[in-house]
Length: 74
Image (cartoon, rainbow, N blue to C red; front, side):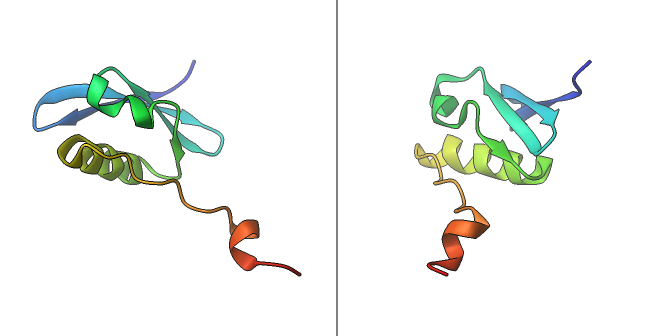
């Protein structure tokens, strides 16, 4: 069975964080956060911060670049 955590912002249920192999996957239930739906972040805290930022700003933060892409040409 998958482990999940409620994600709420100031008492408003906005989604769930599901623990998967590479971190926490967000499942949005609030239409303001559909841009984050399916996003995987490394920690539950990272996911909650991204959800809060998107909820209040109306913008979904860009995902971090993979380490390989950030290194540049070899």
